[in-house]
Length: 504
Ligand SMILES: Cc1cc2nc3c(=O)[nH]c(=O)nc-3n(C[C@H](O)[C@H](O)[C@H](O)COP(=O)(O)OP(=O)(O)OC[C@H]3O[C@@H](n4cnc5c(N)ncnc54)[C@H](O)[C@@H]3O)c2cc1C
Image (cartoon, rainbow, N blue to C red; front, top):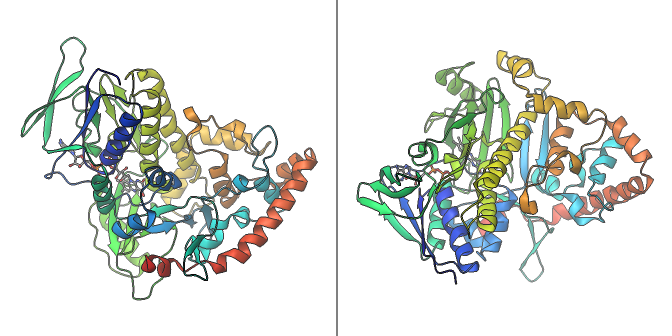
């Protein structure tokens, strides 16, 4: 047991705050540290109230903690997410799906280096890449990830982790209930006392008095009360490559008997895009748009016309995509919206929070040092997400001033350089730098469906690659054929999505 007692104080009781509390507590116990965790949250300041789509990492985390998935689905009114349907992004009237399962995980590896050889084969053969993904079929047929056995029990259709859509407030409450042994203080923080020599925070100044601690985690969302407000952290804006700066969330009722889509709908509009995320109780929606091209009133009118019904916006949030230049300053770490924000096109935010806490607790918790390495990792993680999101905007659309401006001014040099590179070679693992510890990241497996959907893969290049690798060509054909047949047969056996959720 390490004898130095440490008091960790997390400020903020949103999804980020409670994820941090759970993950810190577990790491403290595992590493046998002498430390306490306190969460300071303010009942006077609401949580963000949106943020309803996850990646598969969230399910892995639930499993890791031993939480019952079905209990989680029930208590947070969650639905299953197999991926994202991108509608009208490449051109009007065309959609593509981004299923999040990776078929390469269930076939023989390519050899000494990981290769997306099934994707390369499909591209060379002029097939839809999604056809070798189990989740593409489940998504399209609005299915659950389980089938009912003869004895009434449930059997998973495949080994892949799906993701969720949930009510953010209910998910926060769920995580809060699970974080047993954490001290909770209801207080509003207005500043902090700092050590004159080191600049480190010694105590928070709250409306219930001072709260002392040794290490502070800023999870105060867009308020960034500690990392910016106290430590003077600098915001690096991504506005030059991601032009959307407002989000107008609203809810739609689910109609009687309506099936719940097990995918996030990301539907491109005249000045941005609309998200549609079903929970069991409602469809959470929002128009993310650029106010340089439309006004809030026009944005609302546009969505009402598109949906053919009136909407009641719950908010009109100003957003500034970007990140802290240094996510960790002195004894203050920022996580969640306090640390970075990107439009929710690939649900990177909650995912980023989990991975950041995994890296922090794995490599930095014991000695509480290594700021430089941590900050480099956190910056790169979010910069890579930015580049991935930027890629989605490489579109044939020029039908509105927004889409023309996007094509002319907002496709980043990084995106252009990659696309240039992929004109001559297929995307491969060597084009992406892994994160420390090999934690889940946006690498080639996530890029392939998007590149395919946008028409940015070159089948001549794929054929040339396979001509030089006849072993992979044969493996690719065999794997693509067998997975396609297997999944075509398996998907109809799955329960309906709503039927599954209602049975829990
Ligand atoms: C429009 C939009 C859509 C999004 N969609 C997605 C999505 O689909 N998927 C995804 O992964 N993420 C999404 N996100 C991001 C996601 O919402 C957040 O990552 C997640 O909810 C975590 O938020 P948070 O805990 O950092 O902040 P918040 O939810 O804002 O919580 C902040 C907490 O800090 C407390 N607080 C603030 N100031 C003080 C103070 N001075 N003193 C004491 N307490 C204080 C508040 O009381 C609150 O408890 C979206 C975000 C936006 C804006």
